[in-house]
Length: 352
Image 1 (cartoon, rainbow, N blue to C red):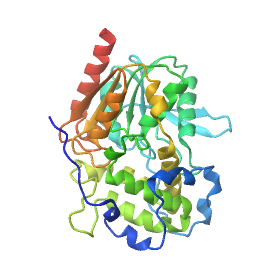
Image 2 (cartoon, rainbow, N blue to C red):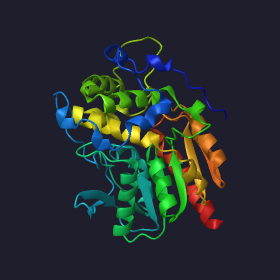
Image 3 (cartoon, rainbow, N blue to C red):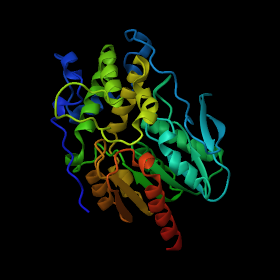
Image 4 (spheres, rainbow, N blue to C red):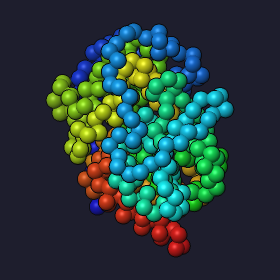
């Protein structure tokens, strides 16, 4: 089965809805210059200094839309701040779900219902879009803290999208995972694989760079991203939303829009995205010495299946599978197919 070619217009035409007409005269930093905007994230304008805008959506509960029984727990960071996470009943090995930046757990519903019957699942809503934004290293420290709090000395890990870099950086620091599954990994900044980056990824980065440098422009980016993620994308013909064709999009909408629900969340998400993309994970890939399953979605317009396949080729012990007709949200759309693949992978590696 071949990988479909993804093409929805030039990068400078994306996203629809006219973001770029508001940014005329503002220099969009080239992709290669992304580290210039990272620095210490506190150096940029604080959200409180940005222009006022409607509050937007209320915070979405991490477990909204879930029926599986999860026990909320709290870990305390060294600075005294609290980190909420969730644990299912202990029915087998520890399985850690590492989520995409800023999203609740609804997309994981099918996987949570399935694996909570055979594992002890640990999961959380990655923090940082409300309050103080967090760097990639902060997210790695959060994962380390949660597992230390739960006295976990060995586990299996499943990631989605940006959660993949967190897992890789964590494994290099603390290699306690016996196997890992990367779903629709976000791998921007991998030398030699730039051709597999999607127009969505490249444009999202450019917009986040603009907001990180010019928080006063967050309102324009926020409005356009909300329209795009809500599926309301009037504008240029022939330019498709990356969410086009996603089954159940209406249920996911509140969770997907939340990172752009206010000026504050838009600025915080943008800072995190710029920091996230600045990290080259090639050294972390080289450190992976356990079995890995990479899953790509045939119709993923956010993170291309070709990128996941190319990353699999760089790992010493990796399998790759593609979800036919799967989008970036195939874990939500096709949970039975995804859980069957992961089950087979886990069982095969355990037997081996």
